[in-house]
Image (cartoon, rainbow, N blue to C red):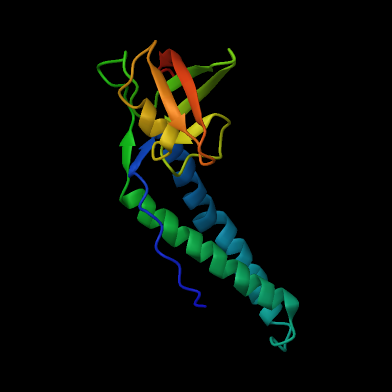
Length: 167
């Protein structure tokens, strides 16, 4: 059995202005504050002598590799991403960045915002534009219904109650 994994599908190259600011702030923090702190700690640990049994040195080097990996990822990602910072002209349809209120068959409502793949997990209700639910919602209007095929084979029906583009 090999350890090879197929490459992950490429995510959409879109991000909201808030998401771009958050990723850019993370990059600046890692580059200007965190990396210099860890570098100094590694330097101090290296000055203690034998590096092969020095846990602080080994852990610091590992931490530096993780920081550098994240910096490389963020730098590449931010260079190749498009910031969507304005609402579409037709605000009656669902597009990237929209807040959508859905109602299921039981009358329960849920509110989602369609955002880029790099923004999910930050806020409750954020879904990736690449997610099956978001793909079904794109270009739909209020009072339309969508049918979502679940992984277990069942289907769920949702009604679009409201569309909003306010931040």
